[in-house]
Image (tube, rainbow, N blue to C red):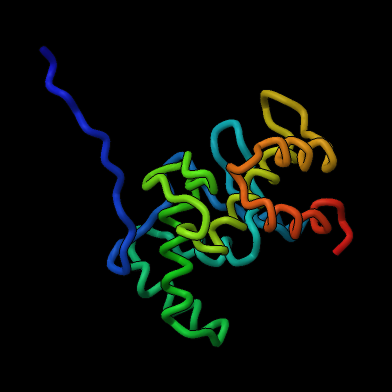
Length: 168
């Protein structure tokens, strides 16, 4: 009988030193003036806050020092920034209905910022061209997200609608 192995996931704390995996690159496109996360079979355009966090994920700085830098740069309370950075790094795969990982959190157990990052991440993945498929239109992408039902926060998804359709 083979020994059973239990999958574990590293938990993010203020002392963690996050870094991007070797196959993931953060690159600036000076022609477009935009940052991109490059991964196999995927290009993602993160929002400005995510870029500021990812630029600092160098395996050298702690989450605490990243939060301190951001708090100073944005003149924001360190406690709020620290909790948002930890939440973004730790819980961006959680889903509103509890089907995500690593903790199976649901609803209000997931911070607002993470629930919004999840919506933006999925939307970006749908409207960007991939090596294995063409991009979806904004309307098709939004319709697909609405079909995800309770996996996404419905209120935040509807608040995101004007941005998805360019009415902001």
